[in-house]
Amino acid sequence: DVKVTQSSRYLVKRTGEKVFLECVQDMDHENMFWYRQDPGLGLRLIYFSYDVKMKEKGDIPEGYSVSREKKERFSLILESASTNQTSMYLCASSPATGPNEKLFFGSGTQLSVL
Amino acid sequence: SQQGEEDPQALSIQEGENATMNCSYKTSINNLQWYRQNSGRGLVHLILIRSNEREKHSGRLRVTLDTSKKSSSLLITASRAADTASYFCATENSGYALNFGKGTSLLVTP
Image (tube, rainbow over all chains, first blue to last red; front, side, top):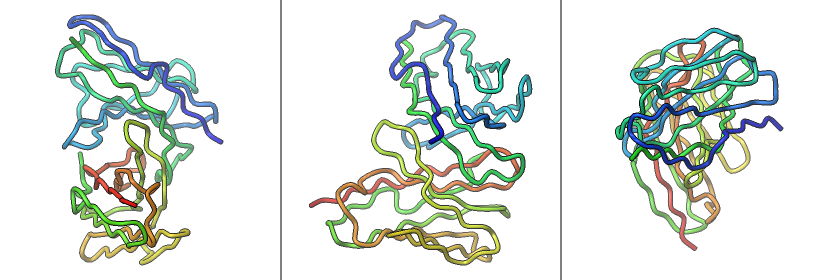
């Protein structure tokens, strides 16, 4: 089975800290995604990547950056964490080079910024 | 941008009953997918229906798609307590990222 692993299940950080959220997939997938999930707002796309060193902005990229140095790893970076970035962060991957037909999700990281 | 919009937001039924959730979207799509999320966990893919299909079945799941109305429905038959979860529709129209709705929260009571 495809496994998407997010490095932390829960994370508590202080305002202004630089935060790294790591995601690793073990199935050689081309595409990787970062979503955030907030009550009443559903899932919103932050960034995605369709190849190593490639990245594309999603719907809400402000305050975030990403890094994809290796195919299996996609990192989300909060340059200076703020309280409005408290959220559940979900990483996903897919093998598609065309229309996505199935995303595989990690278990999520619940980030609290105090 | 979010495209799918599920209805109802919340649904409470008893075990053995059927659960129906609806999804509406705004623009043309390549496919529409349904995902389930157990509380506080990641999403799990349930079923996909392509734009040229009208109905698909998978076990107790039945999905319909009406592209003229830009809507889809997910039917779970003979619901079980273990079906308690949030259900999301997701549309694919760009070749890359999926656009998710806000979800329907389903509670199945014994």
